[in-house]
Length: 283
Image (cartoon, rainbow, N blue to C red):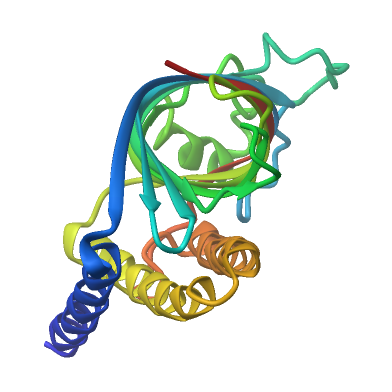
């Protein structure tokens, strides 16, 4: 009962924060919306880990493609642009595409995933041209199918049984990414970022919903603080938004790596930590 009360209380706070967000977006009705189809391709160097797992995972690399639409909201009075990219993602984490030297005895894998997400931030523009830098934050819901090419020795039943909970099955999870996108022209950008992907053994609706609501309340509070800065100093607001949100998400995802439904408990999540590089093409 206490958990339900906490969740309802947090939902009320989040609803109020979201109402303030809508007020900002409709401020004087000066936001102009421009939508474009977008393709984003990335390659990354990853590390797999599972808290308390004694066996070693082999290095993996990732390849991802995102398809979706960007929405640039331009405030004509303030000269401020908000970038939003809603996308479908499909990708692979695999030892087979990793160029680093293999270590004998490490567990090799090939994992496929898909998901839906949103990337956003406030571009910092230079001059009258199209060159700009976008400090961004991205989050998505994911479904990951871990495919192990090798398993722990049968003498290590603890590791073997834990890994079999993920192997050959689609599991729900969340992923967060923070980075910089350098727009060298109106249609082309270079990206570099860090992603943490948490995959859960199982999905518990109420506990996961409570955990997500707590996360969103924190994001709403950060948004309210950042909007006050954006009204006065757009460049400073963009940087503060990037730093605060990514630091906040890192902390939340670090806690969930040990307890998948933090603060409501749960088993450790299977994690992929990835440094990513890629390109974005906007039409």
